[in-house]
Amino acid sequence: MLTEEQKTRLRPRVVSLQSTAGAMIVASALAASVIAAIANWDELGDRLSMLPLIGAIFGLMMIGSGITFPLVFAGEFATGDSEEERIKSAVQSVSVEYLIRFALVQAALFTNLLVLMLDLHTITLGIVGFAMATLLFLFPFQSRFVGSVEKRLR
Image (cartoon, rainbow, N blue to C red; front, side, top):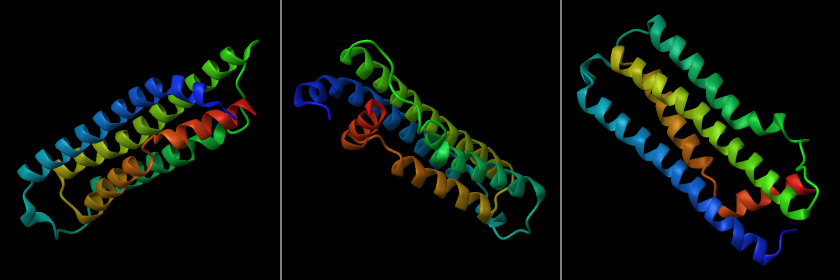
């Protein structure tokens, strides 16, 4: 378990990670709203073509990998000679994990926004909404971040 002093020293790192995640969410929301404004909504009921289907499959694979990505590194522990080095190692590892998760989900989101711009379909709208919800679900709250760091220290 981390002491209160150690948690206090982690706070700037958590705020930095939260700022990055927040910027990625805002950028995604702005891009989605711009594309929604220029989309031709009369074409929404058209039959399914290959482009939205490929975008949906890619999107689901990327979102799934963004959610399950930490399972790959679940057995990885922090390294270092001193307690301070082990904490820094764990914090760096968890920070990179969060950023990669967000990048994977955002890749799915922006790919499907591009598909939405080219070929408007309900499936693509669903994947964009699912990706936005996943970004909000994966947001690095301080308690979740500290819990991940503590798991790495065990």
